[in-house]
Image 1: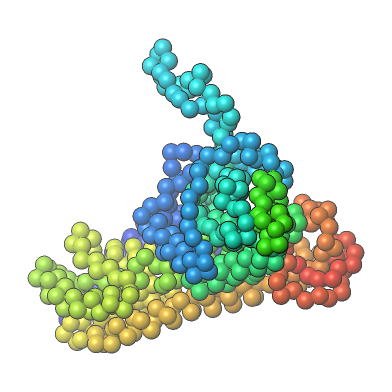
Image 2: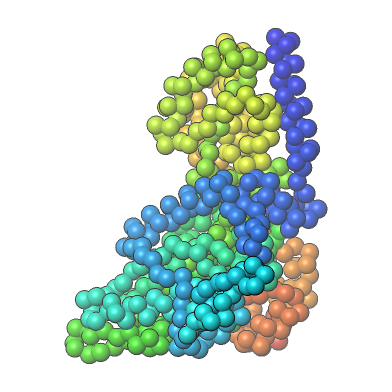
Length: 509
């Protein structure tokens, strides 16, 4: 018994030593540095040899794949199909929709030549004789190439609606980048739909906002506020942008997904018309909507702590890790044999399980590694546990350990994973709700913004000039006009002019 106790203590010391060697900057010390360190140390992503671009590592990509799978299922359940469009877009296409090109002109990467050659010194250079007749834009978003394509697909009302989604990468030449949150190249999905009526298109835009909100809350365990963007914050070329806004642990907001009602702007720009049931020729109505790998950053910042990632079970690549405690190969073989049926039962319930029987790493090292990677449940089992018919289960969200009967493990794990998912959502919701503050003066606005952060509910006179002035003075922007906002008489927090409703301001990523 004393030897076994010493064995556990020795491994706990190992875990502490590892934790110290990999110690993260705390959120209180430097939230930005904490985030950057965590993304790298938890093996989610790293900077690449291309400035502003990232390498998404297998563990990070596994999380993205789970997000992708759930979203893809939700898109298809609402009638959408996947397609793929070219990454290169002729420059002339961007000239057809003025506000759209204005919105993306400073972020576009441009292809001008199509061939390389060796110079007299053997260096690889661009062949000056291989210049493209028309420059190509590397896709920053696909509205233009898709609407040029839809012109060929749509002839009559029978061809509508078109409900298409694309999973792709895009390039936006960002100068200041941060892994997942803002990179020159990122992964995303973009839906592009065409409709016979304005009402159908608006309904589609709002439906996709609901889909995104459902995914964020039910899978990411991240509460969001649904609302509409102000005119200056709308997507370039949209008549209305619907958004879901989340709040990170540092009190800054993050736009987690947007859905755009494009009206007939792109249909007119690319001459996409259809014949109505009455035989008239009319332009179609459009939407676009998307979320990106920015959701990975949101997931990290919503739940994680100073020890590492905290992942909601529904998106965790590994929901349960089992670490055997053994002193020799014979004990490992005995434990492994005992666990075979348990692992099979867990997997039969749809629970992802990793049995880490590597002999190259000590249990304490493994404990610290899986804590850093945010695995929701960790099971430890040794020879004495086998004798007692028990095992130890640690919860990552609460950092609690419990001794459970071996026979009760499957039901306990299933129930606890649900509890963790619910607990993470409740914890994030409580934080979010405690950081929505109503203010009635600009002094109060500035005081709350600096001392507390979060969303500030304030009256606004509806002018872009006031919005820009508030941004200039405080760096806070209008995150959204909430869908459930109530009409009430008030005075603009900055100008004192009449206002009929409150909007939500915040500093944001």
